[in-house]
Image (cartoon, rainbow, N blue to C red; front, side, top):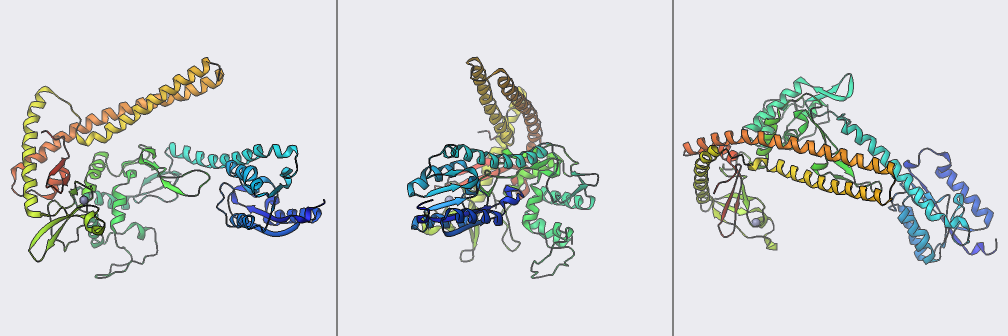
Length: 520
Ligand SMILES: [Zn+2]
């Protein structure tokens, strides 16, 4: 062909795992095909660009980027690939290149096997956008297939993860089912027992280490290289750390539920995984034997936010871990001042970023603050008991603060159901207008109805649960209140059971959030 030698050609080669094991797609065979084509047509090969092991669903590929740079600098003005999917499997991106970028830069593009040549007006070029969509669908389909099969296995409550949670082992007769590992389960129980007594993660970790209880890591024979400073613990047992304790105390697996799908891929075009919203976790209840009963587990969860690290050397403060800055909502810390022999509070956010004036000091004398707060708690507790006497006589069943979470779940399910009902109506209108046929209508409406029904069942279950929780809580709370009012020096454990959080404002306003419904 005349004039072909005026083209400075870049050949682009790409291979990725999602292309399967097709020999013709290997680097070697792509290269030999392209070189032969160049030779036959008398083109000038300017450079070769190879992306080995990069997916076609995005353009984050080193050689592809280099090729674009070379187009920009004028080093090349023509690109040849074996077929369009080598360039990319993302329709929008590929279309953008072929329909806008290349013409714009006056770059000629040839996809040999697809018969595409952007400088020759032929019918194959017209199908280029369609081809790009097909390539995109291929990628989408593959990723959906993998995801959906894993997803459905999770929904069945099958345990699909490779490693077993501590306390369990895989059922020898069914690898997707968990059974209790007696020895480890005892350790899990001990950890929950210690947490019930309002011990911190740190304390529990130290206690377990002291008692020479084997860590999960030492069970799994991991290589151990924690530095032992004071007393060296035998490698056989290992050193327990706070994060392990926290992971165990917050894992719903121990009540017998399978919780999976904690992370997800953003979509098939990006490699990155993100943490799923807890609402999107795939939770299947009662898939295996529980180690911890539900009530204990839920109760421990309410204690955990107040569980702050308190090294033993540090002074003990009754309200430590409960104080928050009312203005910026960060924690308020208590520090002992040698100079004055007194302890003071400071907003943590202010202290850390004092240069930036993000918050104010929130300085208070801790002893004074504590006595003011205790007086206030006493007052509210007395009121609560008085009001409750009246309440009981009129049998008022109000939601407590602890059931707030359940209430929110119910609300969100109800909102979802309203939307689904709207969709159902819309589908019906579409059918009436003839936009969809009978078969489509039946399929879509069946699915929607099914989903609405499932949500309704969940709402009913949650409502029952909230009444149960409320009953237990009221009795329990009354016990704590009576105990609190009967003693002069309340324990930290008792306070934690009554108080959720205490907000301290710069103007010295104090706002106490109670674990029970505050009556004022
Ligand atoms: Zn603050």
